[in-house]
Image 1 (cartoon, one colour):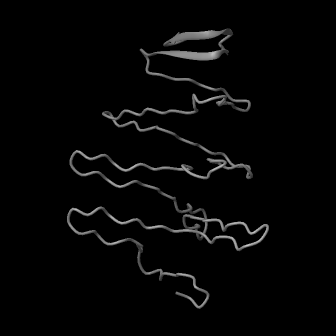
Image 2 (cartoon, helix red, strand yellow):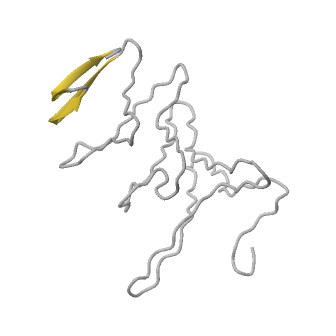
Image 3 (tube, one colour):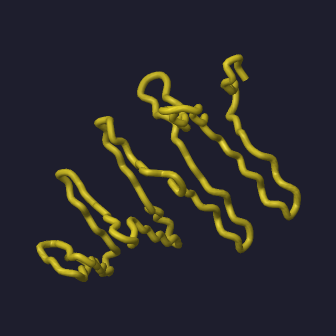
Length: 173
């Protein structure tokens, strides 16, 4: 720990910050990392919490990745969840909004033979709006070769020049 209160590790090995294993039949303990709370008075914003992979060095090297993983199950338990924006989040931003970069944002792309991925985007509560948009590229809805997909819309839709409340698109359409 530095005089300024920073925690710095040597570069001789990978490092881990963790809570030790709990006693038998006792749940594991939480580890919380929190940014600073704003002081009293007007305009005292809370501090940002920044987690960043390592920056590359040298020439033509890749930056370090940031991986967030839940805990593994044992026996018939369930694997842990990854929750983002579950409390006090006005906006959950995924992807870059300020730099001119090419991004691939993959959601639910597990291609393991026995896997099943169910992806839900949007809400059915109140006047919630779900917007799917693209620039000059396409918006593609792709299913298995023999699959058909149904699009349901309470207030209508426009799809391949057809509009209404429901449409079924068969493979190849």
